[in-house]
Image 1 (spheres, rainbow, N blue to C red):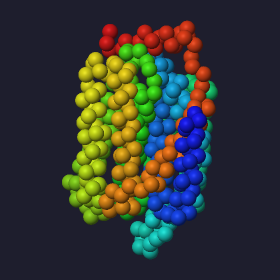
Image 2 (cartoon, rainbow, N blue to C red):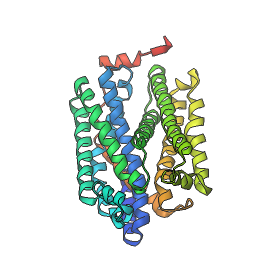
Image 3 (spheres, one colour):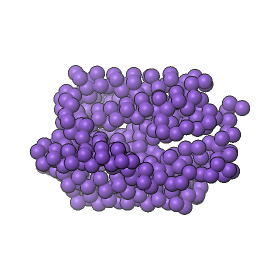
Image 4 (cartoon, rainbow, N blue to C red):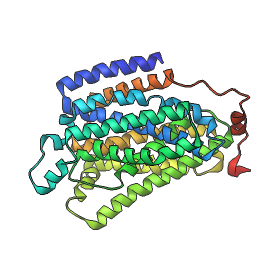
Length: 350
């Protein structure tokens, strides 16, 4: 925890300096790091909810680790403050509202007071949902939270990421953000946990399934925009598929999908905790690259690494890690019936 605290504090100091001398670059770097961390925390929350809603046995093997990740939500909510304060440096619709009928109509939704209210609603709801699933979990509560959680995650993805380019719209953007974060959360659970082969295999299958779902939604969005070929939609992909950003896209496609897809395909490797942990680390790293690819082309026509691109994740991930460690719940007792059931789980391998 001391190392995470040192990294977090040092990163926070560096980011504070960055906001004072280069607010635009600092804002985009910080938004990338924060959106990445929040997507994983929300993915962990969804994992906990699924486990309780379905009464699953094997999820208990990873439940405490997931609850620790969910415990970072209050700190991540506080860490949203710099984004709200420096929003005019990040979001073009605050600097240039426009005067056309379409822009005036958009301004009714994308204005700072209403945007802030929606952000507060989303963050408060996520914190409350996380605390409910950590302190008073039940199948009924988990099931009741799924729909509002889906709506708030979708709204937040529209407000905080898609609105970076307000003239471009995709109705599945929130689904892409959710699915990528959920896969990364499952991968982080695999990377930081050591479970029996049965539970590890179940986690691998779930990760593999949602990895396919994530790339399907990504492909469907791109394919539909490509065949429609509308001037208002195509530029988003033109920017992200040209030059250096095109190379990043290829790296995400191959590294973020093809390699983990085949790595987790085999029965034997997908049941090995050490192997799955290695794949998990790889997926988490590629998820950061994916979020970076979503955000940074708005600022740079070509990939351009900046020292703030390192400082921002150090600040956000360091402080979030401290919160997760401090708020980590006590592990289940070894003789807990739920632990015994998780350790004896064999699933489809029976």
